[in-house]
Length: 228
Ligand code: ADP
Ligand code: MG
Image 1 (cartoon, rainbow, N blue to C red):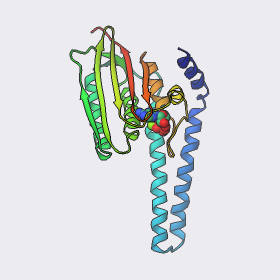
Image 2: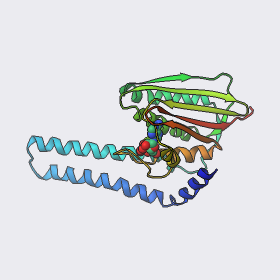
Image 3: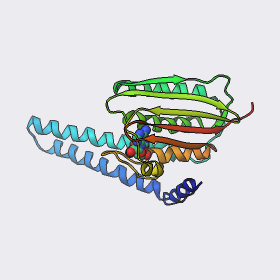
Image 4: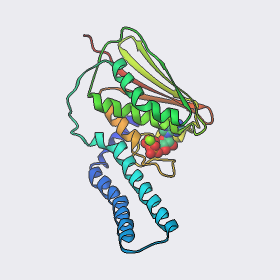
Protein backbone atom coordinates (compact mmCIF):
# COMPACT_ATOMS: atom_id res chain seq x y z
CA UNK A 1 0.00 0.00 0.00
CA UNK A 2 2.78 2.38 0.92
CA UNK A 3 4.42 1.84 -2.45
CA UNK A 4 1.17 2.30 -4.25
CA UNK A 5 0.54 5.60 -2.44
CA UNK A 6 4.05 6.78 -3.20
CA UNK A 7 3.48 5.92 -6.80
CA UNK A 8 0.22 7.87 -6.91
CA UNK A 9 1.98 10.90 -5.52
CA UNK A 10 4.67 10.50 -8.08
CA UNK A 11 2.10 10.14 -10.80
CA UNK A 12 0.86 13.60 -9.89
CA UNK A 13 4.27 15.02 -10.52
CA UNK A 14 3.83 13.51 -13.92
CA UNK A 15 0.93 15.77 -14.84
CA UNK A 16 3.34 17.82 -16.90
CA UNK A 17 4.48 14.65 -18.43
CA UNK A 18 3.32 15.08 -21.99
CA UNK A 19 5.21 18.36 -22.09
CA UNK A 20 8.31 16.66 -20.71
CA UNK A 21 8.15 13.90 -23.28
CA UNK A 22 7.70 16.20 -26.23
CA UNK A 23 10.60 18.20 -24.89
CA UNK A 24 12.70 15.06 -24.81
CA UNK A 25 11.66 14.14 -28.32
CA UNK A 26 12.77 17.54 -29.47
CA UNK A 27 16.42 16.84 -28.59
CA UNK A 28 16.94 13.87 -30.88
CA UNK A 29 14.87 15.50 -33.63
CA UNK A 30 16.88 18.70 -33.46
CA UNK A 31 20.11 16.79 -33.64
CA UNK A 32 18.89 14.76 -36.64
CA UNK A 33 17.92 17.99 -38.36
CA UNK A 34 21.31 19.51 -37.64
CA UNK A 35 23.29 16.61 -39.05
CA UNK A 36 21.13 16.32 -42.18
CA UNK A 37 21.62 20.04 -42.80
CA UNK A 38 25.38 19.68 -42.41
CA UNK A 39 25.41 16.82 -44.89
CA UNK A 40 23.47 18.95 -47.36
CA UNK A 41 25.80 21.92 -47.12
CA UNK A 42 29.30 20.38 -47.03
CA UNK A 43 31.12 17.73 -49.02
CA UNK A 44 32.46 15.70 -46.11
CA UNK A 45 34.93 12.86 -46.60
CA UNK A 46 33.18 9.49 -46.77
CA UNK A 47 34.25 8.46 -43.26
CA UNK A 48 32.77 11.62 -41.78
CA UNK A 49 29.54 11.11 -43.70
CA UNK A 50 29.22 7.60 -42.34
CA UNK A 51 29.86 8.85 -38.83
CA UNK A 52 27.13 11.48 -39.14
CA UNK A 53 24.73 8.94 -40.60
CA UNK A 54 25.34 6.64 -37.65
CA UNK A 55 24.66 9.50 -35.25
CA UNK A 56 21.43 10.22 -37.09
CA UNK A 57 20.36 6.57 -36.79
CA UNK A 58 21.22 6.55 -33.08
CA UNK A 59 19.16 9.66 -32.46
CA UNK A 60 16.21 8.24 -34.37
CA UNK A 61 16.48 5.10 -32.26
CA UNK A 62 16.46 7.16 -29.07
CA UNK A 63 13.27 8.88 -30.24
CA UNK A 64 11.71 5.53 -31.13
CA UNK A 65 12.46 4.13 -27.70
CA UNK A 66 10.82 7.05 -26.03
CA UNK A 67 7.76 6.55 -28.21
CA UNK A 68 7.71 2.78 -27.64
CA UNK A 69 7.65 3.21 -23.88
CA UNK A 70 5.23 6.06 -23.79
CA UNK A 71 2.90 6.42 -26.72
CA UNK A 72 0.15 4.01 -25.75
CA UNK A 73 0.11 5.48 -22.30
CA UNK A 74 -0.61 8.85 -23.84
CA UNK A 75 -3.93 7.66 -25.17
CA UNK A 76 -6.99 8.80 -23.19
CA UNK A 77 -6.94 7.24 -19.75
CA UNK A 78 -10.47 5.90 -19.98
CA UNK A 79 -10.04 3.87 -23.11
CA UNK A 80 -12.61 1.19 -23.64
CA UNK A 81 -12.45 -1.52 -21.02
CA UNK A 82 -13.41 -4.83 -22.55
CA UNK A 83 -13.39 -8.46 -21.59
CA UNK A 84 -9.94 -9.76 -22.43
CA UNK A 85 -8.99 -13.40 -22.80
CA UNK A 86 -5.61 -13.35 -21.11
CA UNK A 87 -4.27 -16.32 -23.01
CA UNK A 88 -5.06 -14.83 -26.42
CA UNK A 89 -3.63 -11.45 -25.43
CA UNK A 90 -0.50 -13.12 -24.15
CA UNK A 91 -0.08 -15.12 -27.36
CA UNK A 92 -0.20 -11.88 -29.30
CA UNK A 93 2.44 -10.27 -27.09
CA UNK A 94 4.69 -13.29 -27.38
CA UNK A 95 4.41 -13.15 -31.15
CA UNK A 96 5.46 -9.50 -31.11
CA UNK A 97 8.35 -10.09 -28.72
CA UNK A 98 9.78 -13.33 -30.14
CA UNK A 99 12.07 -11.76 -32.73
CA UNK A 100 13.37 -9.34 -30.10
CA UNK A 101 14.11 -12.18 -27.68
CA UNK A 102 15.57 -14.49 -30.33
CA UNK A 103 17.95 -11.83 -31.55
CA UNK A 104 19.33 -11.65 -27.99
CA UNK A 105 19.57 -15.38 -27.40
CA UNK A 106 16.68 -15.36 -25.01
CA UNK A 107 14.44 -18.40 -25.07
CA UNK A 108 10.78 -17.70 -24.40
CA UNK A 109 9.04 -20.47 -22.49
CA UNK A 110 5.32 -20.20 -22.07
CA UNK A 111 3.17 -22.13 -19.62
CA UNK A 112 -0.50 -21.59 -20.17
CA UNK A 113 -3.16 -22.21 -17.60
CA UNK A 114 -6.44 -23.83 -18.57
CA UNK A 115 -10.05 -22.66 -18.54
CA UNK A 116 -9.17 -19.07 -17.77
CA UNK A 117 -11.83 -16.48 -17.11
CA UNK A 118 -11.62 -13.11 -18.83
CA UNK A 119 -10.28 -9.95 -17.19
CA UNK A 120 -11.24 -6.34 -17.80
CA UNK A 121 -8.94 -4.01 -19.72
CA UNK A 122 -7.93 -2.28 -22.91
CA UNK A 123 -6.20 -4.75 -25.18
CA UNK A 124 -3.54 -2.40 -26.57
CA UNK A 125 -2.65 -1.06 -23.16
CA UNK A 126 -2.44 -4.54 -21.72
CA UNK A 127 -0.02 -5.43 -24.52
CA UNK A 128 2.04 -2.37 -23.74
CA UNK A 129 2.15 -3.23 -20.04
CA UNK A 130 3.46 -6.72 -20.80
CA UNK A 131 5.83 -5.64 -23.56
CA UNK A 132 7.54 -3.15 -21.26
CA UNK A 133 8.16 -5.85 -18.64
CA UNK A 134 9.29 -8.44 -21.17
CA UNK A 135 11.64 -6.00 -22.85
CA UNK A 136 13.28 -5.28 -19.48
CA UNK A 137 13.59 -8.99 -18.75
CA UNK A 138 15.30 -9.60 -22.07
CA UNK A 139 17.58 -6.61 -21.48
CA UNK A 140 18.45 -8.01 -18.04
CA UNK A 141 20.05 -11.04 -19.76
CA UNK A 142 22.78 -9.56 -21.97
CA UNK A 143 24.25 -13.01 -22.55
CA UNK A 144 20.91 -14.62 -23.23
CA UNK A 145 18.96 -17.04 -21.07
CA UNK A 146 15.49 -18.25 -20.34
CA UNK A 147 12.41 -16.13 -19.97
CA UNK A 148 9.44 -17.95 -18.50
CA UNK A 149 5.95 -16.62 -18.84
CA UNK A 150 3.30 -18.42 -16.90
CA UNK A 151 -0.44 -18.01 -16.62
CA UNK A 152 -2.06 -19.10 -13.41
CA UNK A 153 -5.62 -19.07 -12.10
CA UNK A 154 -5.98 -18.96 -8.35
CA UNK A 155 -9.23 -18.37 -6.52
CA UNK A 156 -10.66 -15.09 -7.66
CA UNK A 157 -7.64 -13.89 -9.63
CA UNK A 158 -5.56 -14.54 -12.70
CA UNK A 159 -1.81 -14.16 -12.49
CA UNK A 160 0.79 -13.62 -15.16
CA UNK A 161 4.31 -14.47 -14.01
CA UNK A 162 7.28 -13.21 -15.99
CA UNK A 163 10.53 -14.62 -14.78
CA UNK A 164 14.04 -14.05 -16.07
CA UNK A 165 17.47 -15.28 -15.04
CA UNK A 166 19.09 -11.91 -15.51
CA UNK A 167 21.09 -9.42 -13.48
CA UNK A 168 18.44 -8.98 -10.78
CA UNK A 169 17.94 -5.98 -8.52
CA UNK A 170 18.59 -4.81 -4.97
CA UNK A 171 15.65 -4.17 -2.62
CA UNK A 172 16.17 -0.44 -3.09
CA UNK A 173 15.92 -0.80 -6.84
CA UNK A 174 12.79 -2.94 -6.59
CA UNK A 175 11.18 -0.28 -4.40
CA UNK A 176 11.80 2.36 -7.02
CA UNK A 177 10.24 0.44 -9.89
CA UNK A 178 7.53 2.46 -11.58
CA UNK A 179 9.05 5.76 -10.60
CA UNK A 180 9.33 8.08 -13.61
CA UNK A 181 12.87 8.37 -15.00
CA UNK A 182 14.24 5.64 -12.72
CA UNK A 183 16.67 3.80 -14.96
CA UNK A 184 19.96 2.00 -14.49
CA UNK A 185 20.63 1.82 -18.20
CA UNK A 186 22.94 4.12 -20.11
CA UNK A 187 20.24 4.76 -22.68
CA UNK A 188 17.12 3.92 -20.68
CA UNK A 189 14.05 6.14 -20.60
CA UNK A 190 12.98 5.08 -17.13
CA UNK A 191 9.39 5.30 -18.35
CA UNK A 192 8.58 1.72 -19.30
CA UNK A 193 7.53 0.49 -15.88
CA UNK A 194 5.82 3.71 -14.93
CA UNK A 195 3.56 3.06 -17.90
CA UNK A 196 3.12 -0.59 -16.93
CA UNK A 197 2.22 0.21 -13.31
CA UNK A 198 -0.25 2.82 -14.42
CA UNK A 199 -1.97 0.49 -16.89
CA UNK A 200 -2.18 -2.38 -14.39
CA UNK A 201 -3.59 0.08 -11.87
CA UNK A 202 -6.30 1.10 -14.32
CA UNK A 203 -7.16 -2.59 -14.68
CA UNK A 204 -7.50 -2.97 -10.89
CA UNK A 205 -4.50 -5.26 -10.98
CA UNK A 206 -1.48 -5.56 -8.71
CA UNK A 207 2.19 -6.01 -9.48
CA UNK A 208 4.61 -7.76 -7.20
CA UNK A 209 8.30 -8.23 -7.83
CA UNK A 210 10.77 -10.72 -6.43
CA UNK A 211 14.37 -10.23 -7.38
CA UNK A 212 17.81 -11.34 -6.42
CA UNK A 213 21.06 -9.78 -7.64
CA UNK A 214 22.82 -12.02 -10.10
CA UNK A 215 20.00 -14.56 -10.03
CA UNK A 216 17.01 -13.03 -11.74
CA UNK A 217 13.68 -11.37 -11.36
CA UNK A 218 10.06 -12.47 -11.24
CA UNK A 219 7.25 -10.05 -12.02
CA UNK A 220 3.75 -11.15 -11.05
CA UNK A 221 0.70 -9.35 -12.39
CA UNK A 222 -2.50 -10.23 -10.62
CA UNK A 223 -5.93 -9.34 -11.98
CA UNK A 224 -9.41 -9.92 -10.63
CA UNK A 225 -11.29 -12.62 -12.53
CA UNK A 226 -14.52 -11.75 -14.22
CA UNK A 227 -17.35 -14.19 -14.19
CA UNK A 228 -18.53 -14.64 -17.77
P1 ADP B 1 14.35 1.53 -18.67
O1 ADP B 1 14.18 0.13 -19.16
O2 ADP B 1 14.25 2.54 -19.76
O3 ADP B 1 15.57 1.71 -17.83
P2 ADP B 1 12.05 0.88 -17.05
O4 ADP B 1 11.02 1.72 -16.37
O5 ADP B 1 11.55 -0.07 -18.08
O6 ADP B 1 13.10 1.87 -17.69
O7 ADP B 1 12.86 0.08 -15.97
C1 ADP B 1 13.47 0.79 -14.90
C2 ADP B 1 14.67 0.05 -14.32
O8 ADP B 1 14.23 -1.09 -13.59
C3 ADP B 1 15.64 -0.49 -15.35
O9 ADP B 1 16.60 0.47 -15.74
C4 ADP B 1 16.29 -1.66 -14.60
O10 ADP B 1 17.38 -1.21 -13.82
C5 ADP B 1 15.21 -2.11 -13.63
N1 ADP B 1 14.59 -3.36 -14.10
C6 ADP B 1 13.36 -3.50 -14.62
N2 ADP B 1 13.09 -4.77 -14.94
C7 ADP B 1 14.19 -5.48 -14.61
C8 ADP B 1 14.55 -6.87 -14.69
N3 ADP B 1 13.71 -7.80 -15.18
N4 ADP B 1 15.77 -7.24 -14.21
C9 ADP B 1 16.62 -6.32 -13.71
N5 ADP B 1 16.34 -5.00 -13.62
C10 ADP B 1 15.15 -4.58 -14.06
MG1 MG C 1 12.39 -0.62 -20.02
